[in-house]
Length: 144
Image 1: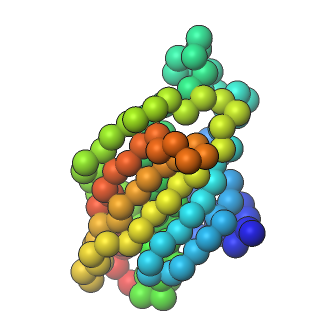
Image 2: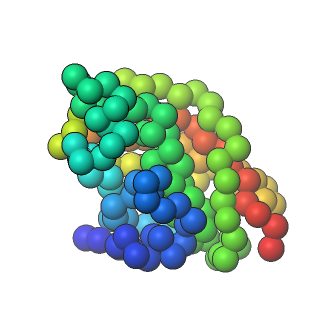
Image 3: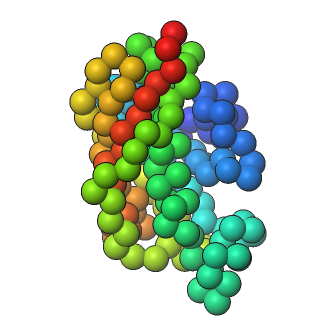
């Protein structure tokens, strides 16, 4: 079940082509967790230029995609509505497998500690049941 389509996601976060990566949100529990999807396509320039022989998604863009999903979760919280979320730092990051073109990258983000305008989320990227990346992301939200 789709909870948010592209247009609604773009109304919430400032990212646009070519750095907009979330295709849809499939589950959303504001202040708790989100599940989103990214369709990894050979038509994306950054995939063709990173490792042309392998056609895999660059690990840094996996983190950016997780951060965008986290932004949706954060900004759907009533306390952060109408603001902008920024990625402050990345901890405990692990890349466990390559993400080839043709994959559906499933992004799972859970809200951790939140204080005033900053907080932490735990993230996981999967292809099917295979975990391909995990990270703890720290965020800052703009002042009201």
